[in-house]
Figure (cartoon, rainbow, N blue to C red):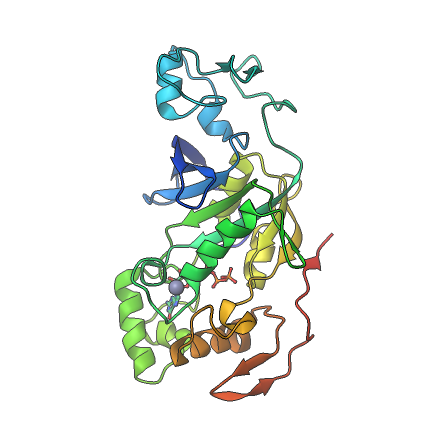
Length: 306
Ligand SMILES: Nc1nc2c(ncn2[C@@H]2O[C@H](COP(=O)(O)OP(=O)(O)OP(=O)(O)O)[C@@H](O)[C@H]2O)c(=O)[nH]1
Ligand SMILES: [Zn+2]
């Protein structure tokens, strides 16, 4: 668990447009950093949310090299020769004397409340159809809510937002140790006990990388999609970064009988997050394996944190 020390140095190495099967184009950003050798990512919705480290002009760099790195405005098309101007869209990036991108209303998103998810990698939940956790469901929902204007009483991102995807599998212990933790859970431990029995912290993640990536993307005011109070505090880095709202992520299985994951394992996972990790799920926790846990409130509310 990181304390709020100095920020890691992050460098966006490359950005590419990804047309999605669900509609909007997203921009996948790959980061290097000075803390670990993992390829942490930012999935950015919105062409104008721009990484300062990617767009910074480099000595003797050609426009072609900028376009190949993904440091361009507007859209790429065959025959395009200039990265910093898109004549079709009438957009031109501005830079200051040492090559830093200048924040302009027309070309760079900034200072607006931005819907953000800081998501930790979970191979089992995102790729192996696991019903032990809701990570895959949360990843999908984050993308959906960022694309939507609103869903019920939750204001969406209207096509602008960021999913910071941290390669911190297994709350930082890695996939191999997480598989051992699963076996301990099948032997009766909960997710916290299993980590501790394997001589790991309950949660060994470092969210400072997430803070540094959001600051690099010029995000200042965060509407954070999470139930984890630790993430809310970890996103604060005044004066550059501030969490203005926590937007809850209610498990789909709590909002409909058909949707979402229904399994005894997910109930144990959610119960442990609430009872032992203080997660802020606001719905009455009605689990088939236990009585109603009185919730602190009976409606889904978003906390506005000023
Ligand atoms: N060690 C361990 N890690 C788990 C287990 N189940 C899920 N995880 C990991 O827990 C992490 C879940 O991260 P997130 O969903 O981003 O965040 P969160 O802390 O659950 O909080 P939210 O933002 O409310 O979802 C991922 O790294 C998963 O791999 C488990 O049983 N044991
Ligand atoms: Zn998971």
